[in-house]
Length: 186
Image (cartoon, rainbow, N blue to C red; front, top):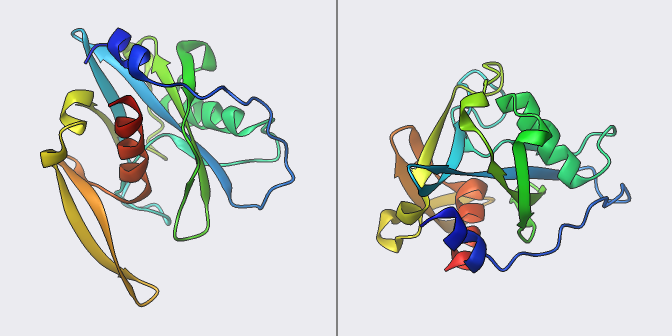
């Protein structure tokens, strides 16, 4: 899928700008980084370092909690992308947002979709990101590439979908947000 095909199919929600602070402390935001490599649409994923306290060695999007200095969730996503990938907001063209995703741990994650204008400017912060890698959108859009994943949380058996990558298993909130984007574009 090319970038133009993606944009034409993506029923964009309006960017909501400043969302204020009258919300629970567990608000967070991520940026789904879209890029074109050899005229093919890819999504950038991060792998977290193993030594981190929360979500060690997991695959994620750049993002994190809403900080008091952030003027909005969109601002938080852009700040985190700058901190983790060294990308200033001028290198990102925001395309839209997806519906919020609620985690089992009580976080509300607001995903924003952004085009990375030049992937060669990425300079990862090794304290937050072990590596970055790219998966073609067309591979993520094939349902046969996703497998069921069962686990127990709070004494309940739960089932999610997961995607095998060379860097580990894409699962949990990041996988569901990815699937939500695929569904919206398909």
